[in-house]
Amino acid sequence: MYNDDDLQRLYDDQYFSGRSRPPMWIRRAEFIIEKFKPKKVLDVGCAYGELVKALVERGVEAYGIDGSDYAISKSDPKIRNRLFKVNLNSDKFPFDEKTFDVIGSFYSVEHIHNIDFFSKELHRTLHDNGTAWFLTPNEGEAGRNDRDVFTNTFQGWKKIFEERNFVVREFSPHEMMALKGKLGKFKFYKLPKPIQKIIKKIAYNYANRKMNDTSFILTKY
Image (cartoon, rainbow, N blue to C red; front, side):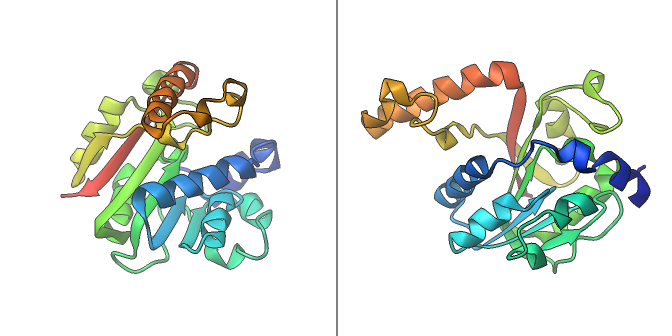
């Protein structure tokens, strides 16, 4: 299991190079607000805190945790006091019980060795009626390496979290897609909303053939 020296060595400037994508995090923040209507949000594996910043700018009380000194040091100073250094394998989340109605984990859970400890902290800090949303590679043990130490398929994650007092269901975030981006030339955004939703789902499923991600929701028993 990685200690602090391991985390700083693996998750340094080289690892985070090219990972800053504010427009993507702005749209994700908008989607979280539209879909979950949260009051308090925690971003697990927050990196530069771009999601936290986008949420705060839209009136949501948001915080982030990450194990990388480098990533947190490069965050916007305006929201840095909302970001906390946490080794997700061993450090308690620095929040009270049942603090968050939404917890997001975007490509971070596959980096965790001690899933028992992490699950307990997730369960402790999530509100009884809260939602945790995970995006992670849909890969089994063959996808594991020195950083992605705990990759699993959706069925694997479902079993893992159901054994740790969560209800697990697949969740498609296709509505998060922006039809004015790469698809803008087709002017799908001018179509009625129900048709837009269908197009977004088709586009997301097509894109995910290459990404091969799984998206799922956790709630407490």
